[in-house]
Length: 454
Image 1 (cartoon, rainbow, N blue to C red):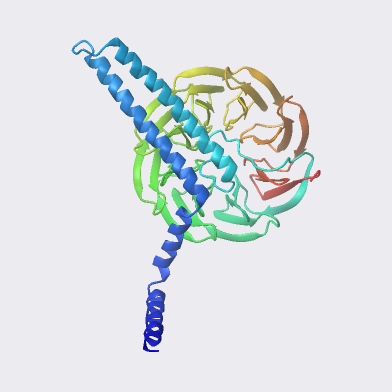
Image 2 (image 1 turned 60 degrees about the horizontal axis):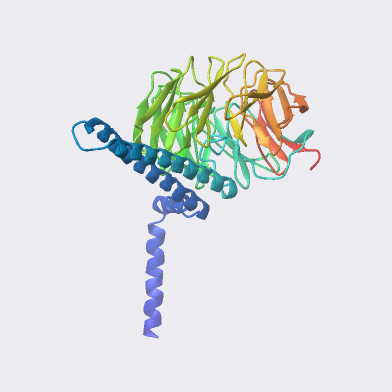
């Protein structure tokens, strides 16, 4: 009986202490558990770490080669040894590309609600579900101040920032506001979602981390406006570009600055992560490849004009558009040029890569499909307006905004299957799920459009 009384007293003391020590510390503990407890995230992070380790091995091999070539004439290092190192480096680069591809495959298979970069994966071809067949009809419409950021979603909600200085969570089924928070600035930055935390920037220069229930975890003020650049998450860091010309790497848990990389002009594109590198284009007309951990530049490539387009990467090839009216394809490991495709207008649209084909739009009002290997034109479709957003591919149908028009195109034949016009220009890219597509216009509304054939 005495032991039982001692047990009750101990339990009451522990409960009291727990209540007193709750509050902020308890909330932080819940957030930390939410970040790290997901099995799918753990698998993604293990693969990310594998890519990083393989990059370190590559760097060591390259260091050995550089030393061998430098001291060849002064030592007994043979030409055969140098040749062996070059072959090992080639094999190691191939291993990195394969491991990075595996990250994308796991993300597509299991990470349905993990949006760790703009458009979900490095190829920007991210969709899981059955066909969304045109024509489309209204499911619901939500009125706000207009949208230039693109939406993301989880099981319950759509998440998107607005030009009305608010960030919204909308119920996917009804379009009703689940919650909203004022952020004192226009949000043109598409959010990332990782471990139950949303990350996005504002045009007043702040980056926010907010739980999917609408509670602020942290806010960090950066040097200038975050205009269109959307955050990317990799291995504990959040990367985002600013109009002050810096790419910032912040601690994902508390927003503390880890490193920054300076370009010669503002950054409006979003970072793309693959092969243990960050690919970021700048308005200084340069595409940069940086190490994910240190921010050290690995290579750079000079285009003919500003780079607004976010790059896409697949299987060792990096593609992006420029204001010089060209689409570039580079070797994503060393930055060497593979081919160039000339369009008839500025290319701000983010390209999408699917099954060795690139899809992108241009200010010349065309949507293009090119062979990834050689840049050969497969087809193009003329639209009513400029194509600024990224195409959205659902199995064999491509949906895209062109000015005030939405088009649906057969990706095999290039045949226009359906189109519909709206009152205002559509600036966002699309996302979709289970027969429904979501997007917003630049002036007033966010839409859920349902496949009539559902």
